[in-house]
Length: 309
Ligand SMILES: NC(=O)c1ccc[n+]([C@@H]2O[C@H](COP(=O)([O-])OP(=O)(O)OC[C@H]3O[C@@H](n4cnc5c(N)ncnc54)[C@H](OP(=O)(O)O)[C@@H]3O)[C@@H](O)[C@H]2O)c1
Image (tube, rainbow, N blue to C red; front, side, top):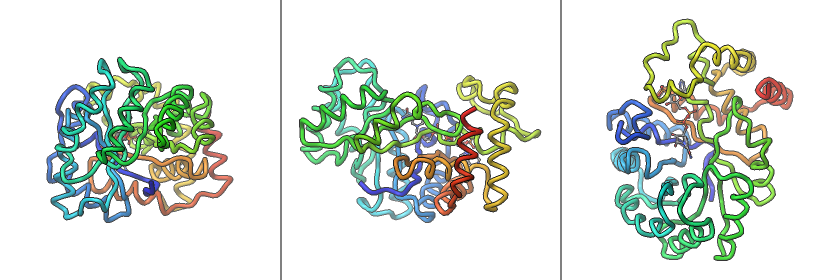
């Protein structure tokens, strides 16, 4: 599976539907189409959505936008996710046609288990995924939020069906380095599994905009504010990272967000790709620009050091 180092996260396309979708304000379909067009124009070749993002709303919005801007099916890569909570593996095969309907006419290239909490064991989930691949309903299989041990288990279970686990979608950014310490990154490299970094901008914190005096996090959704990252004490803790990013950004005539993304793509060879979300054309154009930036080894080392504090 070949994708651009940066993909577009489509949780923002949930249109405020369901609990998960209410995290972001509802974007008009016209804006969604503009963001999708700007992504493709800027060299982004893939899109990450999920059943749980508005209960299919994000999948429908993405497909409609791709159609509106004239992207032929099969020319971009679409990733979606099955929601496992309180469900058995039987629902993987039971709900796939609904997923395909929401994304129609775009095929599901990568289908991921959204998180590890299911009523069925990993082996049964992988068996169901393999069945979908065999039936031509999906092309590749991935997981998300799987710890190292469970990822290894999924890899082994899928291999029994002759398939390779291609990815584990994990939270990763300069402000969240857990996968470097808990064995996920090492295990992924050992097994040849790509890490798809979600929340790579720490939901906007790593753009530096919330560290500006005129910033107004009170306009964000309650759910988003509840993460605590926008509180003054937390912003004070992340400020040294923003200052270090600003220094490097100056040297590259880039933005703080672009350097945060470039670090993520370059700090570990090609083991990691990232899917920043965007709510405007300006954001997606800027984020895609990170693919053109080449950091020096000393810049990567300096950022890695300050981000690890
Ligand atoms: N597998 C999972 O469990 C999981 C969990 C979370 C996310 N995801 C996936 O990962 C994607 C990205 O994660 P995320 O949305 O949580 O966090 P993110 O990508 O770190 O942050 C996205 C938000 O940051 C702001 N932003 C982005 N680019 C910007 C720029 N250039 N300048 C200023 N602000 C900018 C925007 O906020 P405003 O809209 O407020 O402007 C945008 O909505 C999601 O869309 C989803 O596909 C997966």
